[in-house]
Amino acid sequence: MRKLLLHIAAFCTEERVRRYPTIIAITFFLVWIGGFLLNRQDRTVDAWGKFLGNDFVAFYTGGSFLLQNRLDDLYNLGAQHTFQQSLTHVELAQTSPFINPPYATLLYAPFAAIHDYLLAIIAWYALGILAIFLSAKLVKQSGPLFDHTRLKWLIAQVILIPPFLLWLGYGQATPFVLLILSASYSTLTREQPVRSGIILGCLAFKPQLALGLVLVMLIRTRIKALISGFITLLCWISIGALWMPDAMNTWWSMRSQWIDMLRDPTYPSWGVCSLYGFFNTLIAPINTTLADSLTVLTSLALIIALGKMLWDGRSSPLSSIPNQARLAIVLMCSPLLSIQYYTYDLVLCVLPIWIIYAISTTTAQPQKKTYLDGAEVLAMTAILGATTLLGPLFLSMQLEWFKSFHLPPVGIQPVTLVIIAWSFYVYKRYVKAINTAS
Image (tube, rainbow, N blue to C red; front, top):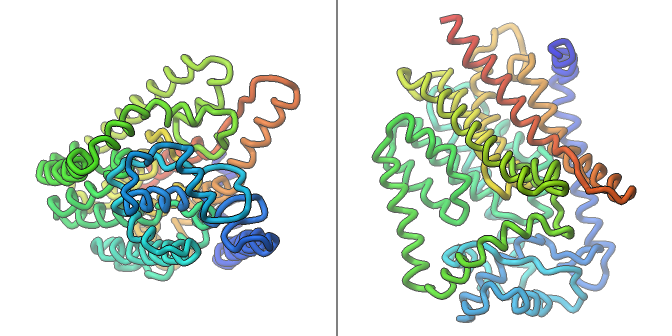
């Protein structure tokens, strides 16, 4: 296996690292734009009957219902469909449901105030790109570890990966999640726990993605960070409970339906990369109880493993190279605990990659101009990038193949496995090896 990884690493020369992701990004962008140019009926619906930013239209719907004082209809899928259909004269192939907590409508209301949907999505994209730039800038300012990294390289590592292109297609909120995580990571590394906690609490609309840094705060006993984060989260929940109590009750009562939605035969489960998604496509079509049990057991095992790894480094400063590598592993693996960790969410992988990239520029030998030490970690990062593009397609082909033989549609999500493998090699290279050497 090591020889194969070294061959892949040798293939990843500086010229190829620059060329191939750029070619893929341009090709995807042209195909994406072509989908709208082929449809002459409406400027906001593509050739497949989906909105430009198919998930953003759900946010736009939620924000519009808040502005129109229609919170009673916030989780009425029929009302949502009627509203979304009113945005275009093209018959929609499906409804993009709003399932965020009701207080999240406050975040989307400014975009819904733009009555032209096309202008609203353009503003969303513009702020998303700004969020990516700010994320890179905040991480660059995290400390001496990033002194030798260049800001444009950090930004390029986001824009040229396949998940960024998927974000363009779906119009999700991932860049804003990346900004929150990057800001919380940066302030935590600089020993500003209160700020870090307050910032992390802003993930109230997707709290499951904060689990990794919460675990770090627990193990490192950053009590101020935990308290400030909890207070921020409580403020968001209080806004919902006091201002929109009926909507909060409805959302909470429907939580099991949101999970069941992932098992709907029409749902594109091939794009879910979490542990839940992994076992949902591998085992649930045969035995749902077994799939749920394995999800719980592997989630607990992952939490214990990450906690043990962080505990081993508690005596060293958080800014030390082994502990920064531990942080990267936690940030890479913890989103797997989220039930809905979709392909566009893999943009979040760039934060741990940024950290390891910075470590490699610090530990690399001056005479060697290689990325990520030019060894197994570089190879696994290349494999991860390729898998985020091809993995969901591979899983979709597996599911369709079983369906063609009238068998339960099962398959393996390779993205989940590659994320775990990447973390293993990072641990081996930047935690275990450095600790052994010292």
